[in-house]
Image 1 (tube, rainbow, N blue to C red):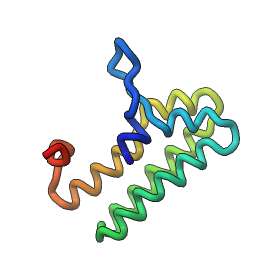
Image 2: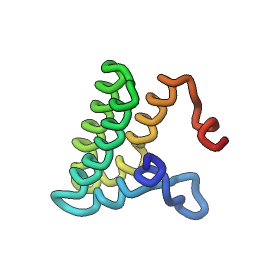
Image 3: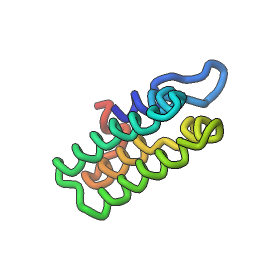
Image 4: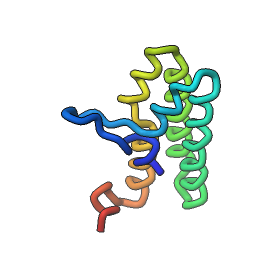
Length: 106
C-alpha cells in the first residue's frame, strides 16, 4: 500500500516517482484528506501488529504533516511528490521488527 500511495509511477527520464497520494492531492478540497484516510489504514495496521506508541505517534505526525503541507495549493502538490509519508511510516514498522525494505522482496 505504501508503494501504491508514494511511488507507484516513475516520471520517465528522471529519478522522481509519485503515487496515488500525489494524484489524489490534485482533487481540490477532498484529495489530501482521502489520501490521509488511506495512510491511516497503514497506521492502524501497525497498531494491530504491536508497533509501540512512540512510533505510532511519529507515524501520525508524518500523516498529519503530509496532509497539512499537501493541502497548500500548487506548492502542496509539489511537496507530495517529494515527501513520502507512507514510505517513512513503513520504514518505522520495518525498523521495529528489525527488517529492511530489501527483506520484503524475499
